[in-house]
Length: 242
Image (cartoon, rainbow, N blue to C red):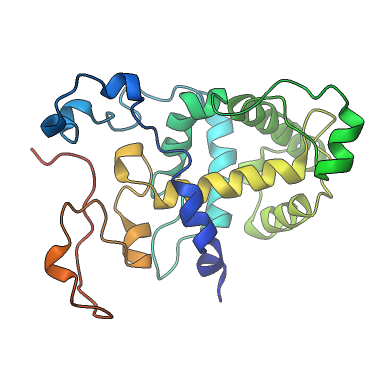
């Protein structure tokens, strides 16, 4: 199994669903059933008004350098940044996911018990805060060790850094758990590469084509009896075709 295949395990497919924005029950209330799946209630495509969180160009380039080593361009498809994963995570960080709306961010009453029972620290910062702190620390680390921005490092240097980061061997300062930050970026780049293009990532649907996912098709009844057959379906996005 190559690196790209390993990145797209069943767990990453399931994780993709966790950051896709949904209308709340209150928002859906009083919306006629026949219009609930129309463009009138769909989120608008990401990055309509420019970057909202990743406004610093160096931060974007550094993150793209990491994303493109986690999912590089190859015979199976374009790289993560080419496929819109930076736009995807910027949009997510600007919304409920970035704010940690679904997370418990209040500290434990007994922190020492938390580590004994869970085996890992509880993060009290939102994903948005973790990215901002982590990217700032990443650039500071690169300037200290290489006297250059992280994105200017070559592929071998970035790979070595990421290998050590995944193993928890990189010190990005007291405010950043480098291993956990690596895991967060890995999760998010997978999600961006497999998201609906509506959310900014997977903009040419390369991720879906690679795994054979046909997208947001309305009806599959005509294919129910065609088990095990390659239907060669062209992926369909949630983006309305006017």
